[in-house]
Image (cartoon, rainbow, N blue to C red):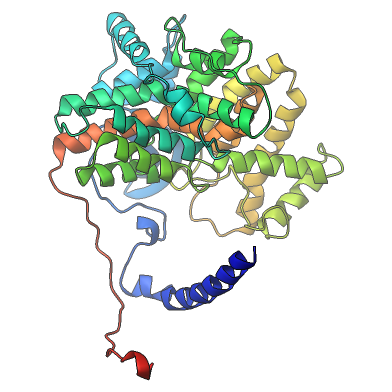
Length: 451
């Protein structure tokens, strides 16, 4: 420990100098018209590509004026509301939407059955992979565990150097198929080794959908209700893709443009998604809600809850970041369509689970938080509940452990990543190489004895 303390003191000095020399005057971004985070002051993203995979709408032009509108999300030209409304009987939302995003058209029943069969055939990890890779050095950070597994799978692929589109597409399909296993098995390994709980490794059932397999592999008794499977199925569809401009999808296209292999591309996307500003946001919502309920004396008292939300916004309590998690979005203004869909299922699930009191509290925060933010912040666009606000609550009602929240996001989003990877490979022949404005001042070299 003494050695570590000495290293810590030394590196603290280096960090102090690094921080001083790396600090950039924020005014320079305006002077040189550099978009911070690739977004202007109004939150509009810098145009850096063309896609036919999905689209987000948050504003409309009326009489030449840009005005906020209810949020809409399209997959390959189809409104997600219509995709969900069209589900009837025992149709699989994840599989149908995955086919649509990857292939470009809605499948016929025969095509959907064949595609589902292909996914199930690919749900097969190499011999002893679960024991030798997933169960080795298990971690609470399941996103790191999944990333390690993905990179290791590359060692088992004899076609790793084959750059043909056929091979790239097959690799994407295989990774989409095994992501549920990498996530759930990774959790069970962690739960067994670090939490001293029992170990359950259930094989996927080829007769079940992706959502059903997720639940049966996760639960000790493999049981689940049709409502639980349906809600998780819709959750996977909603998280599958989002306009192409999000951080992890942009990462996918950047790394793809360099000519890197599928496994490395998906590992990079996973590293992006795990960030709390991206895929980890729903965890922060759950933590915030639990914190508020633990400190207010009466969770039905709107005045008391409102006052505490103001304290969160003023950085006085919770994590002192000044953020009410689950509120607002970089693109959407009046509403996030994914959150709106979630609301319709959350109520049903809460009733089935006897969680009406919890639902009432979430609904109160949903109503009060946008009002508080509008009153205490200068907002250039509307503030509404985003998809992260309710997704964490849904996963909690499904008895999904907190450690799996972001991995489930990845299980869905790898479909979008795969679609964008293929679009980049088919259309682009240039490496994505953005420009940075250098403000470096030339300096004369000084000999070491004179410094």
